[in-house]
Length: 180
Image (cartoon, rainbow, N blue to C red; front, side):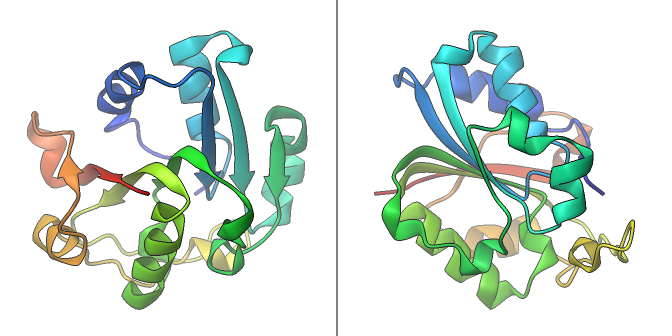
């Protein structure tokens, strides 16, 4: 689905507030309807405080949600094929993205992003979360629907979890990794 549940957004906003960068250079991977763009607007409501690019593989979302007008730059490409070497970011957002690919692809993608970003934020379901294509978008299918908190931490040991309270912490994991 092009949007996501609100879980973890409060913790993400608190974390964003702590960043010393001005403006914040961000990449939103798998933009959908623009969830992290909206989060930055809510947090900073001054557009000069952030620059944000987006990667969205499904062109109808770019068109339907007018993402070219909202993002500073939008890339219509599969994130696994994106050339990270030409950019540096303060933060890369992976919000409800990594479950849509094989684990080995997720590991490679996060590694590539972390080499070109000061921080990587991962928001991922950590319960069995099967999903079929939506709106004709095959990329919406969950290829790895069975991530757990333990597996996420074993896969990326340098992650730290930022949403540690509340009953929903068993449904979604919100993690930060320091990059380059």
